[in-house]
Image 1 (cartoon, one colour):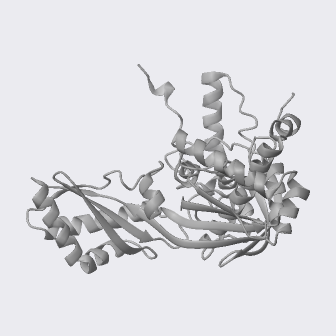
Image 2 (image 1 turned 180 degrees about the vertical axis):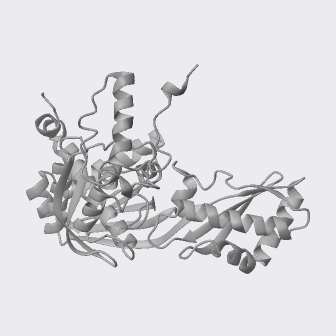
Image 3 (image 1 turned 120 degrees about the vertical axis):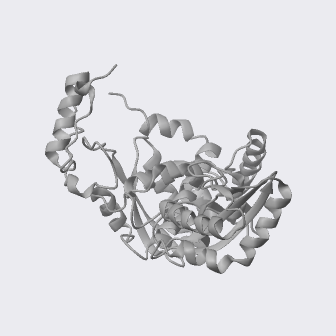
Length: 392
């Protein structure tokens, strides 16, 4: 049993102050003995935190390294970028920095955003399969009214299209929205609730619905995302001269290509959702630095690597990320250190989400190249032994 002395302190008048945070740290010290001296050392005003956290006690300080310049020739990101990576894994920044050098000397990375949607996927329940099938025709015939109901809840969200699937007596709907510069999960949920309420009010029998039937796949990978996208579907590609591979990576295009065949076979055997090397590494470090929702790595880490040796003997390498969920506005992007890191990239505020998505893809490609070469050249373990061991 617990009593009032076990309750975490809260200030019902204003809980986002240094005094309220100190009261909770003091409570934690009394309960656990942990000093929390470093947790309590932070530079921002807690007043900026409503909407980002509850029961605030301090900050987790993750080291941030700088890699670059990364040269990008995108539709939204163009030029040379210095990239902040927040990580505790030795060799990560050095490895990505090496990949960026290789790409820079090869002329840079070409990036393309194919599409960008956020989903909410309700399911409507009926007596049998025929009733569920017939309901689908109603949805198609009333799309304009459904769209109006959804878009009335948001200033920037737009309902692009609704996909449908029948399973037994149920009809699954997957609402796809454009969401401006926000990631848009909450925006999509609110808009879809309004749309479902309109449907239930206008369809005979007022069918019951569940707001999420799980095929929107929040915070988890799905094959549906690979096919239909969630967040941005973005592609980074580069052509790397064989001479550069030999000079900078200690291997060659033909050896890298054979290693890619081995990785594809092994990835198929393992059932992996990424036939590349480790795009989650760089993306997670970039997400932490820039205030993204880090749990979205569960979706964003999936990727498809495609390579070929060109007639010239040079190496073409592309990385397709089908569900990159990022934002330049809202969420944690406006917090103190996170906004500074976005400023490093020229991605602060509205109108920058697609630019940031292209930078993310280019960073992931740099890491793929560097690690693949390290494995082939035999210096993977040596590099970790040199840079990745904390001997204290």
